[in-house]
Length: 103
Image (cartoon, rainbow, N blue to C red; front, side):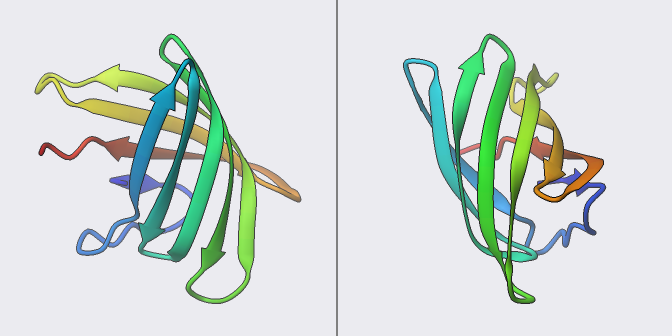
C-alpha cells in the first residue's frame, strides 16, 4: 500500500497484500502497518475488483468492509489498484492505492 485516506501508511512497514485469482474469483491476505492479519474474497470483471474484507488490528479489535478497486497499469508495466472502500458500520468513503512490487 502506498497511500490511504483511512490511515497514515508507514513507508518502512506498509500493509502488503497477496492476491490470487481463478475463474474471476479473487482472494488473498494482507498484513503490516496497522493490521496483524487480514483476509479478503471477491470477484474481478475486467479491470474492476470487488471484495469483502476482514482484519485484526494491531491496536486491538477487528474491522471489515467492502471495496471496489480499479486495476491500472503503470508506465513501468507494474499494476496498481485504486480502491474505494468503506468499513462496516461507517459509510465514510475512503481511497487507497496499492502498487505491485516487482519480483
